[in-house]
Every structure is written in structure tokens, then in C-alpha cells.
Amino acid sequence: MLARGVASTGPIGKAYWGMGTVVEQTLAVNVEGKGIVLISGCGHQSLERMLERARAIFDAPVYGVIGGLHYPATGFRDAPGYVAALIRLSSTGEQPWHGPFGKSDIRRAIATLAAAGPGLVSLSPHDSRDWTIAEFARAFGRRYRELLVGREIVVD
Ligand SMILES: [Fe+2]
Image 1 (cartoon, rainbow, N blue to C red):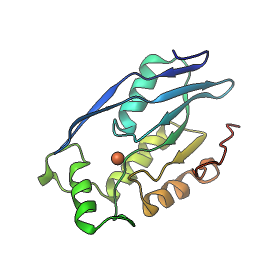
Image 2 (tube, rainbow, N blue to C red):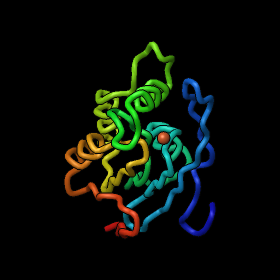
Image 3 (tube, rainbow, N blue to C red):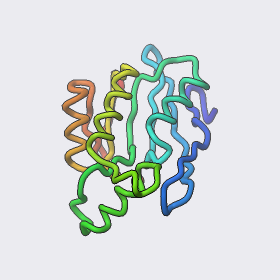
Image 4 (cartoon, rainbow, N blue to C red):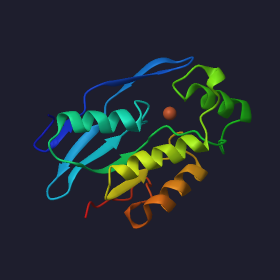
């Protein structure tokens, strides 16, 4: 607990090929009448593990997910192709011969999140590029909010 209604999920690790285990925490805000809004930084611990941890430690349901989820399914606007290729290979959590992280991984993630029935989704562009953000926006419709620096997100 960090304050009344505000907590951390605690550290959650995920192994990435070539990077070792990356450990991150997710901020969790209990919004009255709604449920838990998860706020992630880079999201390297994975959406699945965030949801799993939230369900294990909180009584309220997950209402929203805001922030980075590390979904490098396509190329990067601001990096050479070989950099994007390496990031995509390291991002599956599997050995590189498993293949790169891709669009099917995004569709699976959207299905996982949709099954949680969130009322609010807002994906950061950290390692999630235009195609992925557009897929999330399309999948969640009015429940999706564009995440921009300086723009408030009101949970309603
Ligand atoms: Fe990342």
C-alpha cells in the first residue's frame, strides 16, 4: 500500500532473451465504484502477469489498464530496421528461434485484456507502435483513450 486506495502490485519479473530478467512493478489505483486501474511504466512484466497479480492480491476487479505494455509487433518510426528486429526477437519471452514478437501476439493480448472486461484502456507508445495502438483503439472503441503527455485521463 502506498496510500489509501493506491498500491503497487509488487515486483514482477519476465525473462527476455539477451536481456535477462526484467523486473517491474505496476501502480494500482482503486477507483470507487469502478475497480482497480493498473498503471504500468514499460510493461515488461507482461499484461498477463499484471492481471494475474492484480486478481491474486486485490478484492476489486480490474477496471482499467493504462501505460506501456511493450508490444513491438511492427517496425519503429525512429529506429533502424535491425534494431526493431532485435527488439522483436527478444520480446517473446522465448528463445529467438521461436520467431519475432508480432501481430498475432497483439491479437492474443487484446483478447486477454478484452476477457477481463475493462472499462478503460490506454496504451502508451513505449515499444508499442502505430499499428498496435490502432488495433487497441479499434478493439476497445469508446473504452480506449489516447495516451498523450499532459492530457488528463478521467476514470468515469
Ligand atoms: Fe519495452
